[in-house]
Length: 503
View 1: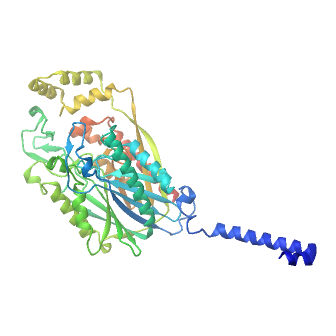
View 2: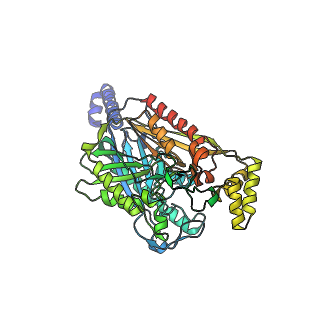
View 3: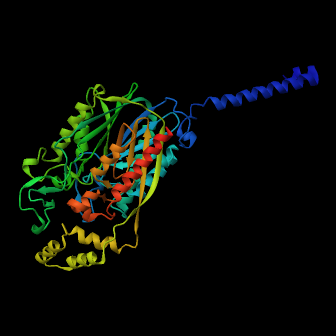
């Protein structure tokens, strides 16, 4: 080329330079239009995870991964709680399951962990690690738990070398799950259905024929009913929800949402590490001819137990039987032919920090609580409980505790996620099923999941009827002022309404 340019003179040099410039420009345009094998310009890793305002382009993918986050044998005995209860035996694995959803532009990661709860600071730490490893923004990640009391907290025992060591191991594993779920992303369609779990879950508060409501065995006799149990204090949400992602050339992914407290195994096997109902649900669903990968999400469960207080009302006597029955129901109900196809769509995720009002008692009530706590004679203490209407000793202790705090509000980190005709809300507390049903009924989406103990663990937030009608240890143990549950229902519904308006 140099020889040719020298022969033709300046004119040819100019032509050659122009051709070279055009060639370089073509190369640059080509590189911008066609990603190499190591780059995906449509992924959230490339876009920063921002939700694009453009119309959804029809690309919808779902991925799945699960990892074992159990304590290992050499880490036992594990201290379950502040009382020093020890776990000495591992019955079955504790898993962290990640469902990845991609709309062609953005990815969200939805986790469910087989543990009692996850602290906000642990959730934020895990998200930061995942963002660094995958470039999926922390704002596009939700951590929820099954609220399984028979499983460990992700970083417990808190503030100890053992807890820190296990927390690091769990963090590494949830990052591993994120990578695997993203790598597993596959074209998918969405199908939705429900099933009734009649007799499996009951509201914890029971009304006697004489109208008295109580439930705790420690309730003083003066506050107990003297007549037979007439039934639960309110109606439990017995609707199990299922979303099945039918994937091309890969096993389908099933997301399940149910309103029930998974704590029963603690009493049955107090020294055993187990995923509780999830063990039996997985056993019923996985490994079948029509294999489906399952992710269970705990719904509104702040006032619900799995078993009834009397033999006549017990259809299922223990967590094993309920787990098997629930697993069979899921398996029998999850067939695509029994579900309804719903639209996929653009991912929208939003967050809000809501300052809930903390419950502050009157000086008279605080004095009654202190008087009851100070009494060491058990019979006299019970007499004071009856006199001041303290259902359990949880109540006076919590009254003193919450009123000793200078704080007047509680920060609640709320999340809402939607794509197509599906939505979910993530609550960092134990929502009562009454409020959960209000969200589902008021939602502008065909399918709405309620996730509790998600991205935080603020304990119980009772519905207003719990404060005014049947009480119980959820009310005894809450820091939230009456009515905050209903206010948060409106906050979630407003978030979902705004999502719909954007679509």
